[in-house]
Amino acid sequence: MKDTAKLRARVRNATAAVLPPDIRVEVHSRPARSMPAFDIIVRAGSAEHHFTGGWAGRGWPADVQRLLAIVPDLDVVYAEKLSEGARAWLIERGVGWVDEVGNVVIARPSGLLVSRESREVTTRAEAPSQDRWTQAMLAAAEAILAGIPPTVEAVETATRISRGATANALARLERRGHLERPGKKRGRGVSRRLVNIDAFVDDYATAAGTFRARQKVIRIHRLKADPLQALTIAVVPALAAEATTWAVTGAAASTLLAPYLSDVTILDLYVDPDLFAERDHLANLLGGRIVDKGHVIEVRELPTPMSARGPKVGGIQVALPARVYADLMVAGGRLADAAQHLREVRGVGPNT
Image (cartoon, rainbow, N blue to C red; front, side, top):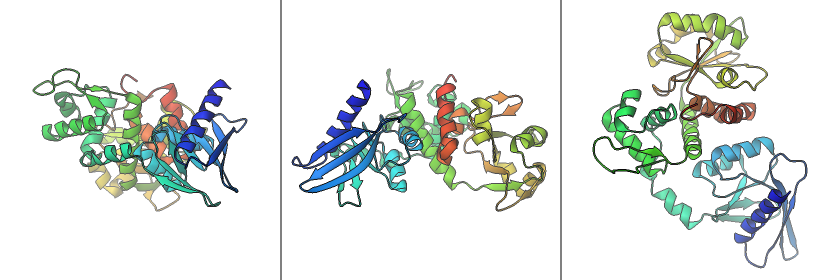
Protein backbone atom coordinates (compact mmCIF):
# COMPACT_ATOMS: atom_id res chain seq x y z
CA MET A 1 0.00 0.00 0.00
CA LYS A 2 2.87 2.37 0.83
CA ASP A 3 4.49 1.83 -2.60
CA THR A 4 1.14 2.37 -4.33
CA ALA A 5 0.67 5.63 -2.45
CA LYS A 6 4.10 6.83 -3.57
CA LEU A 7 3.36 5.95 -7.19
CA ARG A 8 -0.03 7.65 -6.95
CA ALA A 9 1.73 10.82 -5.83
CA ARG A 10 4.25 10.55 -8.68
CA VAL A 11 1.44 10.12 -11.23
CA ARG A 12 -0.35 13.15 -9.83
CA ASN A 13 2.81 15.26 -9.81
CA ALA A 14 3.76 14.21 -13.36
CA THR A 15 0.26 15.10 -14.59
CA ALA A 16 0.19 18.42 -12.81
CA ALA A 17 3.64 19.31 -14.16
CA VAL A 18 2.43 19.24 -17.78
CA LEU A 19 -0.77 21.21 -17.15
CA PRO A 20 -1.40 24.90 -16.33
CA PRO A 21 -1.15 25.64 -12.58
CA ASP A 22 -4.86 26.42 -12.14
CA ILE A 23 -5.96 22.93 -13.22
CA ARG A 24 -6.69 20.40 -10.48
CA VAL A 25 -5.65 16.76 -10.68
CA GLU A 26 -7.01 13.83 -8.66
CA VAL A 27 -5.54 10.33 -8.78
CA HIS A 28 -7.26 7.28 -7.26
CA SER A 29 -5.80 3.77 -7.11
CA ARG A 30 -7.69 1.06 -8.99
CA PRO A 31 -8.16 -2.02 -6.75
CA ALA A 32 -7.20 -5.62 -7.47
CA ARG A 33 -4.47 -4.91 -10.03
CA SER A 34 -1.15 -6.77 -10.27
CA MET A 35 0.48 -3.60 -11.65
CA PRO A 36 -0.17 -0.02 -10.44
CA ALA A 37 -3.19 1.44 -12.26
CA PHE A 38 -5.10 4.61 -11.46
CA ASP A 39 -8.30 6.51 -12.21
CA ILE A 40 -7.36 10.11 -13.00
CA ILE A 41 -9.59 13.19 -12.96
CA VAL A 42 -8.47 16.51 -14.44
CA ARG A 43 -10.68 19.50 -13.52
CA ALA A 44 -10.41 22.65 -15.63
CA GLY A 45 -13.04 25.15 -14.52
CA SER A 46 -16.41 23.42 -14.77
CA ALA A 47 -15.07 20.71 -17.12
CA GLU A 48 -13.98 17.28 -15.90
CA HIS A 49 -11.81 14.84 -17.85
CA HIS A 50 -11.61 11.22 -16.73
CA PHE A 51 -9.06 8.65 -17.93
CA THR A 52 -7.11 5.64 -16.69
CA GLY A 53 -3.36 5.53 -16.24
CA GLY A 54 -0.73 2.96 -15.32
CA TRP A 55 2.86 3.09 -14.11
CA ALA A 56 5.51 1.55 -16.44
CA GLY A 57 8.62 1.99 -14.30
CA ARG A 58 11.67 3.22 -16.17
CA GLY A 59 9.79 3.48 -19.48
CA TRP A 60 11.65 1.03 -21.69
CA PRO A 61 9.64 -0.80 -24.39
CA ALA A 62 9.52 -4.00 -22.35
CA ASP A 63 8.18 -2.09 -19.32
CA VAL A 64 5.42 -0.51 -21.41
CA GLN A 65 4.50 -3.73 -23.20
CA ARG A 66 4.34 -5.67 -19.94
CA LEU A 67 2.06 -3.02 -18.41
CA LEU A 68 -0.35 -3.02 -21.36
CA ALA A 69 -0.39 -6.83 -21.45
CA ILE A 70 -1.57 -6.90 -17.83
CA VAL A 71 -3.78 -3.79 -17.88
CA PRO A 72 -4.95 -3.48 -21.51
CA ASP A 73 -7.64 -0.83 -20.92
CA LEU A 74 -5.25 2.03 -20.07
CA ASP A 75 -5.61 5.43 -21.73
CA VAL A 76 -2.28 6.88 -20.60
CA VAL A 77 1.04 5.29 -19.60
CA TYR A 78 3.24 6.94 -16.97
CA ALA A 79 6.97 6.32 -16.46
CA GLU A 80 10.18 7.85 -15.23
CA LYS A 81 11.44 8.57 -18.76
CA LEU A 82 9.81 6.94 -21.77
CA SER A 83 12.29 5.77 -24.41
CA GLU A 84 11.88 6.70 -28.06
CA GLY A 85 11.00 3.07 -28.87
CA ALA A 86 8.38 2.93 -26.13
CA ARG A 87 6.72 6.13 -27.37
CA ALA A 88 6.67 4.82 -30.95
CA TRP A 89 5.04 1.60 -29.72
CA LEU A 90 2.37 3.58 -27.86
CA ILE A 91 1.67 5.78 -30.88
CA GLU A 92 0.90 2.68 -32.96
CA ARG A 93 -1.69 1.63 -30.38
CA GLY A 94 -3.27 5.02 -29.76
CA VAL A 95 -2.23 5.16 -26.11
CA GLY A 96 -1.10 8.41 -24.51
CA TRP A 97 1.81 8.96 -22.17
CA VAL A 98 3.29 11.20 -19.49
CA ASP A 99 6.78 10.90 -18.02
CA GLU A 100 8.67 12.66 -15.28
CA VAL A 101 10.97 14.57 -17.66
CA GLY A 102 8.03 16.36 -19.29
CA ASN A 103 7.04 14.30 -22.31
CA VAL A 104 3.27 14.16 -22.68
CA VAL A 105 0.63 13.15 -25.20
CA ILE A 106 -2.93 13.07 -23.84
CA ALA A 107 -5.91 13.27 -26.20
CA ARG A 108 -9.28 12.50 -24.65
CA PRO A 109 -12.75 12.59 -26.27
CA SER A 110 -13.83 14.94 -23.47
CA GLY A 111 -11.68 17.67 -25.04
CA LEU A 112 -8.46 17.36 -23.01
CA LEU A 113 -5.53 17.69 -25.41
CA VAL A 114 -1.94 18.03 -24.22
CA SER A 115 1.14 17.34 -26.34
CA ARG A 116 4.70 18.31 -25.50
CA GLU A 117 8.20 16.89 -25.84
CA SER A 118 10.77 17.92 -23.28
CA ARG A 119 13.81 19.85 -24.47
CA GLU A 120 16.10 17.32 -22.79
CA VAL A 121 14.75 14.40 -24.80
CA THR A 122 14.57 16.36 -28.06
CA THR A 123 18.25 17.23 -27.84
CA ARG A 124 19.26 13.70 -26.93
CA ALA A 125 17.14 12.15 -29.70
CA GLU A 126 18.61 14.40 -32.40
CA ALA A 127 22.22 13.74 -31.45
CA PRO A 128 22.46 10.01 -32.31
CA SER A 129 20.46 10.13 -35.57
CA GLN A 130 23.51 8.72 -37.37
CA ASP A 131 23.61 5.89 -34.82
CA ARG A 132 20.33 4.20 -35.66
CA TRP A 133 20.44 0.43 -35.50
CA THR A 134 22.04 -1.40 -38.41
CA GLN A 135 22.46 -5.10 -39.23
CA ALA A 136 26.07 -4.91 -38.07
CA MET A 137 24.96 -3.38 -34.76
CA LEU A 138 22.49 -6.24 -34.26
CA ALA A 139 25.28 -8.75 -34.89
CA ALA A 140 27.60 -6.99 -32.45
CA ALA A 141 24.82 -6.72 -29.85
CA GLU A 142 24.04 -10.43 -30.16
CA ALA A 143 27.71 -11.25 -29.75
CA ILE A 144 27.80 -9.24 -26.52
CA LEU A 145 24.57 -10.85 -25.34
CA ALA A 146 26.14 -14.25 -26.07
CA GLY A 147 28.99 -13.38 -23.69
CA ILE A 148 31.60 -12.22 -26.21
CA PRO A 149 33.78 -9.40 -24.78
CA PRO A 150 32.87 -6.08 -26.46
CA THR A 151 36.23 -5.59 -28.16
CA VAL A 152 36.72 -5.20 -31.91
CA GLU A 153 38.87 -8.32 -32.15
CA ALA A 154 36.50 -10.58 -30.21
CA VAL A 155 33.31 -9.38 -31.88
CA GLU A 156 34.87 -9.48 -35.36
CA THR A 157 35.91 -13.11 -34.83
CA ALA A 158 32.51 -14.12 -33.47
CA THR A 159 30.33 -12.36 -36.04
CA ARG A 160 32.54 -12.69 -39.13
CA ILE A 161 31.72 -9.13 -40.17
CA SER A 162 34.57 -6.89 -41.27
CA ARG A 163 36.85 -5.12 -38.82
CA GLY A 164 35.66 -1.72 -39.99
CA ALA A 165 31.99 -2.68 -39.64
CA THR A 166 32.67 -4.14 -36.20
CA ALA A 167 34.48 -1.03 -34.98
CA ASN A 168 31.72 1.18 -36.30
CA ALA A 169 28.99 -0.96 -34.70
CA LEU A 170 30.65 -0.87 -31.28
CA ALA A 171 31.21 2.88 -31.56
CA ARG A 172 27.53 3.37 -32.38
CA LEU A 173 26.48 1.24 -29.40
CA GLU A 174 28.77 3.35 -27.25
CA ARG A 175 27.22 6.58 -28.53
CA ARG A 176 23.77 5.16 -27.79
CA GLY A 177 24.90 4.89 -24.18
CA HIS A 178 25.14 1.09 -23.97
CA LEU A 179 28.95 0.72 -23.82
CA GLU A 180 31.64 2.66 -22.02
CA ARG A 181 35.44 2.59 -21.89
CA PRO A 182 36.73 2.65 -18.33
CA GLY A 183 40.39 2.45 -19.42
CA LYS A 184 42.24 3.85 -22.39
CA LYS A 185 40.05 5.41 -25.05
CA ARG A 186 41.97 4.57 -28.25
CA GLY A 187 44.38 2.07 -29.74
CA ARG A 188 44.67 -1.68 -30.03
CA GLY A 189 42.91 -3.74 -27.40
CA VAL A 190 40.58 -0.97 -26.23
CA SER A 191 38.14 -2.57 -23.83
CA ARG A 192 34.51 -1.55 -23.48
CA ARG A 193 31.95 -2.76 -21.00
CA LEU A 194 28.16 -2.77 -20.76
CA VAL A 195 26.64 0.16 -18.91
CA ASN A 196 23.19 -1.29 -18.15
CA ILE A 197 22.24 -4.80 -19.30
CA ASP A 198 18.47 -4.23 -18.95
CA ALA A 199 18.51 -1.05 -21.03
CA PHE A 200 20.72 -2.78 -23.60
CA VAL A 201 18.37 -5.76 -23.92
CA ASP A 202 15.34 -3.49 -24.25
CA ASP A 203 16.91 -1.34 -26.97
CA TYR A 204 18.23 -4.39 -28.82
CA ALA A 205 14.86 -6.17 -28.66
CA THR A 206 13.04 -3.15 -30.09
CA ALA A 207 15.54 -2.89 -32.97
CA ALA A 208 15.53 -6.65 -33.61
CA GLY A 209 11.74 -6.64 -33.74
CA THR A 210 11.76 -3.79 -36.27
CA PHE A 211 14.18 -5.65 -38.53
CA ARG A 212 12.22 -8.90 -38.17
CA ALA A 213 9.04 -7.20 -39.37
CA ARG A 214 10.82 -6.49 -42.68
CA GLN A 215 12.08 -10.03 -43.23
CA LYS A 216 10.69 -12.31 -45.90
CA VAL A 217 8.97 -15.39 -44.52
CA ILE A 218 8.27 -18.80 -46.03
CA ARG A 219 5.12 -20.47 -44.70
CA ILE A 220 4.96 -24.24 -44.88
CA HIS A 221 2.01 -26.59 -44.34
CA ARG A 222 2.45 -30.17 -43.13
CA LEU A 223 -0.16 -32.93 -42.98
CA LYS A 224 0.89 -33.79 -39.43
CA ALA A 225 0.10 -30.43 -37.93
CA ASP A 226 1.52 -30.64 -34.38
CA PRO A 227 4.50 -28.22 -34.52
CA LEU A 228 6.50 -29.66 -31.62
CA GLN A 229 6.06 -33.19 -32.91
CA ALA A 230 7.15 -32.07 -36.36
CA LEU A 231 10.19 -30.39 -34.82
CA THR A 232 11.49 -33.48 -33.03
CA ILE A 233 10.48 -36.16 -35.51
CA ALA A 234 11.09 -34.50 -38.87
CA VAL A 235 12.66 -31.04 -38.77
CA VAL A 236 15.67 -31.69 -36.55
CA PRO A 237 16.81 -34.85 -38.41
CA ALA A 238 16.28 -33.21 -41.81
CA LEU A 239 18.25 -30.06 -40.98
CA ALA A 240 20.98 -32.07 -39.26
CA ALA A 241 21.41 -34.18 -42.39
CA GLU A 242 21.59 -31.02 -44.49
CA ALA A 243 24.63 -29.84 -42.47
CA THR A 244 23.31 -26.26 -42.38
CA THR A 245 23.10 -23.58 -39.73
CA TRP A 246 19.63 -23.23 -38.24
CA ALA A 247 17.79 -22.54 -34.99
CA VAL A 248 14.30 -22.61 -33.57
CA THR A 249 12.86 -19.42 -32.08
CA GLY A 250 9.44 -18.15 -30.99
CA ALA A 251 6.97 -20.18 -28.97
CA ALA A 252 8.74 -23.53 -29.42
CA ALA A 253 12.05 -22.04 -28.29
CA SER A 254 10.45 -20.46 -25.23
CA THR A 255 8.93 -23.84 -24.34
CA LEU A 256 12.37 -25.43 -24.49
CA LEU A 257 14.14 -22.66 -22.56
CA ALA A 258 11.53 -21.64 -19.98
CA PRO A 259 8.18 -23.47 -20.30
CA TYR A 260 5.22 -21.12 -20.01
CA LEU A 261 2.83 -21.57 -22.96
CA SER A 262 0.34 -24.42 -22.88
CA ASP A 263 0.56 -25.06 -26.62
CA VAL A 264 2.58 -24.15 -29.72
CA THR A 265 0.64 -23.48 -32.92
CA ILE A 266 3.44 -22.27 -35.21
CA LEU A 267 6.98 -23.63 -35.46
CA ASP A 268 9.26 -20.62 -35.99
CA LEU A 269 12.65 -21.37 -37.62
CA TYR A 270 15.74 -19.53 -38.77
CA VAL A 271 17.92 -21.11 -41.47
CA ASP A 272 21.12 -20.32 -43.32
CA PRO A 273 20.68 -17.78 -46.19
CA ASP A 274 21.70 -20.35 -48.81
CA LEU A 275 19.02 -22.80 -47.71
CA PHE A 276 16.42 -20.05 -47.38
CA ALA A 277 17.06 -19.08 -51.01
CA GLU A 278 16.11 -22.61 -52.17
CA ARG A 279 12.42 -22.37 -51.30
CA ASP A 280 11.19 -25.58 -52.90
CA HIS A 281 14.09 -27.63 -51.57
CA LEU A 282 13.47 -26.17 -48.10
CA ALA A 283 9.79 -27.12 -48.20
CA ASN A 284 10.58 -30.67 -49.33
CA LEU A 285 13.24 -30.96 -46.66
CA LEU A 286 10.72 -30.02 -43.97
CA GLY A 287 8.11 -32.41 -45.37
CA GLY A 288 5.54 -29.87 -46.50
CA ARG A 289 4.50 -27.40 -49.17
CA ILE A 290 4.62 -23.62 -49.39
CA VAL A 291 1.29 -21.90 -48.67
CA ASP A 292 -0.03 -18.40 -48.00
CA LYS A 293 -2.09 -19.44 -44.97
CA GLY A 294 -2.93 -22.52 -42.92
CA HIS A 295 0.75 -23.13 -42.21
CA VAL A 296 2.38 -24.75 -39.19
CA ILE A 297 5.99 -23.73 -39.96
CA GLU A 298 7.41 -20.26 -40.57
CA VAL A 299 10.96 -19.96 -41.85
CA ARG A 300 13.12 -16.83 -41.99
CA GLU A 301 16.73 -16.20 -42.88
CA LEU A 302 19.13 -16.03 -39.94
CA PRO A 303 19.28 -12.32 -39.03
CA THR A 304 22.95 -12.47 -38.00
CA PRO A 305 25.59 -15.19 -37.65
CA MET A 306 25.08 -14.94 -33.87
CA SER A 307 21.32 -15.56 -33.93
CA ALA A 308 21.83 -19.35 -33.91
CA ARG A 309 24.29 -19.27 -31.01
CA GLY A 310 21.81 -20.39 -28.37
CA PRO A 311 21.96 -23.64 -26.39
CA LYS A 312 21.06 -27.10 -27.61
CA VAL A 313 18.13 -28.55 -25.69
CA GLY A 314 17.50 -32.26 -26.24
CA GLY A 315 19.44 -32.10 -29.49
CA ILE A 316 17.41 -29.12 -30.75
CA GLN A 317 19.36 -25.98 -31.67
CA VAL A 318 17.69 -23.00 -30.03
CA ALA A 319 18.28 -19.41 -31.13
CA LEU A 320 20.20 -17.03 -28.90
CA PRO A 321 17.94 -16.40 -25.88
CA ALA A 322 18.01 -12.63 -26.47
CA ARG A 323 16.84 -13.24 -30.05
CA VAL A 324 14.05 -15.54 -28.82
CA TYR A 325 13.02 -12.83 -26.35
CA ALA A 326 12.93 -10.17 -29.08
CA ASP A 327 10.89 -12.38 -31.42
CA LEU A 328 8.35 -13.16 -28.71
CA MET A 329 8.02 -9.50 -27.72
CA VAL A 330 7.32 -8.31 -31.26
CA ALA A 331 4.64 -11.01 -31.62
CA GLY A 332 2.79 -9.60 -28.59
CA GLY A 333 -0.09 -11.12 -26.62
CA ARG A 334 0.60 -14.39 -24.86
CA LEU A 335 3.96 -14.62 -26.61
CA ALA A 336 5.00 -11.36 -24.97
CA ASP A 337 4.04 -12.89 -21.63
CA ALA A 338 6.26 -15.88 -22.48
CA ALA A 339 9.06 -13.43 -23.31
CA GLN A 340 8.85 -11.80 -19.88
CA HIS A 341 8.77 -15.24 -18.24
CA LEU A 342 11.90 -16.24 -20.18
CA ARG A 343 13.70 -13.08 -19.16
CA GLU A 344 12.72 -13.40 -15.52
CA VAL A 345 13.36 -17.11 -14.89
CA ARG A 346 16.30 -17.76 -17.21
CA GLY A 347 17.72 -14.45 -18.33
CA VAL A 348 18.57 -13.34 -21.85
CA GLY A 349 21.93 -11.64 -21.42
CA PRO A 350 25.55 -12.74 -20.99
CA ASN A 351 26.23 -15.68 -18.67
CA THR A 352 22.72 -17.12 -19.08
